[in-house]
Structure formats: structure tokens, C-alpha cells
Length: 163
Image 1 (tube, rainbow, N blue to C red):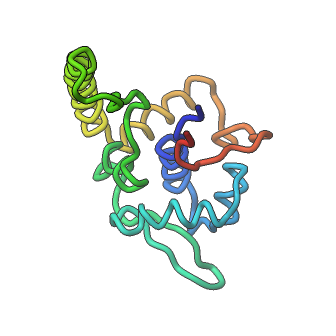
Image 2 (image 1 turned 45 degrees about the vertical axis):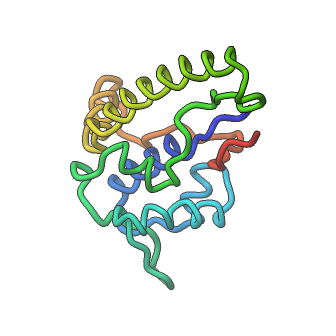
């Protein structure tokens, strides 16, 4: 099963956008992610609807941040990219009258709900500014002054989990 990388990829994009002078086009973002500009536009649309980015059409247009990084949490971005399921683990509903299935589902449901609550709280506590500061520290530690990332050579998709 493939994992859903939209959150990670969009966090990556937003940090790059903050460091970029002027708007970033869907084509430029797509090249950075080794994906299709249509996929970028579709994913960025959720961020725009949430008020995190804005877009301008035409020559000189593209995507820009609409809010400071300190005002955007990882949970905000997670929700903006479609609020994908946190876990791939699910409950069985094959035989709801089976007492064993009921016991298993009750135990799993409780554990999954607790784990999801902890993860969502952690995502809500971390801002994009926190990520940007960590990046800047890492950059300073290695003394790099050039591009933020090495060129990615393999295609990276930002599509939802496929079953």
C-alpha cells in the first residue's frame, strides 16, 4: 500500500515558497516535486481555500503565501490537503454480530482514537515557522549557502493513498 505523501510534500513546498522571491508557478513546483502541474494545482487549491496561499493567473503569476509561517500549523495543512486518514488500519465489519469481532473492534477503536488524538495535537503544536527554523539551523550546520535541496531525480507523487 502506498502512503499518502501530500502533507509532507506540501509542507516542503510551503517552506520553499517562503524562501522564494515572488510567486512560484505550478510548473516550477511540479518540477521540484517531479510531478504534474495539474496535480500541483489540485493540491494547492485546498491550501488556497483554507487561506494559506493565494494564486495569480497570467504572466508573472503563480502561488504565494497568504499568511505568515508562524500562523500555519502542520494540522492546518493536513486539513487543507483533504484531511486524509491518519492510519491505514481499519476495523472489520464483516460480522457485526460476532462477539469476537466486537471485542477486537472495541479495543482497536479505542487505541486508534487515542493515537490519532495524540498525533493531531502534535501536528497542531508545530508551525511552519518551526520547520523553517529547523531547516535554517540544518543549513547553517553544514555551511550550505546554495539551493535548499539536492535535485530530485525520481518521480514523487502527491496523490492520496490507493487501496
